[in-house]
Length: 278
Image (cartoon, rainbow, N blue to C red):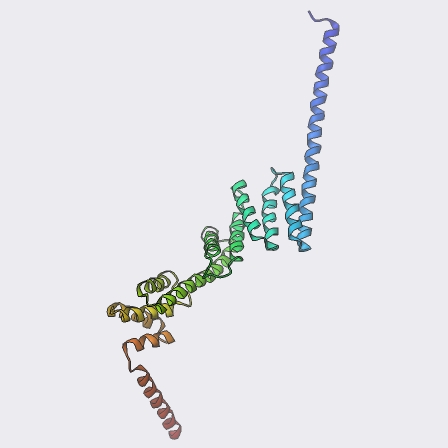
């Protein structure tokens, strides 16, 4: 049987434990509030640094905000803002690394459309010479395509589509450059392959007319007349008023220049007669 002193001791112990737990809960709440305030302060300082065009300081502050409260809804936003801050400063590799980390850490966050768009931009800004370095072009195209196809109802889809058109122009330009190089060295088959790539993959670019003409020209030169005529028909059907169609016409009609000159003289004479009659 417990003595009176034992009972009093147990009651005191229970009360003490109860008070300790209460104090711990209060301390936990205070700590949480304090961390939340620090996070908001760091985030605000990051925005201020961006306004002052100090991208590196902004990146540091947004990163700090994410670390302070990684469970909050502001953590993934802070990660994105860190990436954007690096982008504004021209640190494209750091931007790419931050976005990749964001995608791995917050796979369910609702701003992945912006993340992929920023990835595309970061590679796009690194394009210097499409004839030498394809990696930035290929990666930019990859991420702009993701935005265009998977987030077509967002504000970033339109600009991604526009950027893709520019990228296709660059890629077509590279194919044309290499194709002409092969023509100069009379390497007809590799040249044909390059121009066919433009015809098949980049037929909405400004290079399609020349690519078709080169296919007419080379096929005719190596004796594949029917293939040459087929490409000429495509060129004539779609671009019969272009200079490249004229050049292709000359491939099959050596007297083309003479015919054109005679027609021009006839037209001038008709106009003179009209002026006399009037």
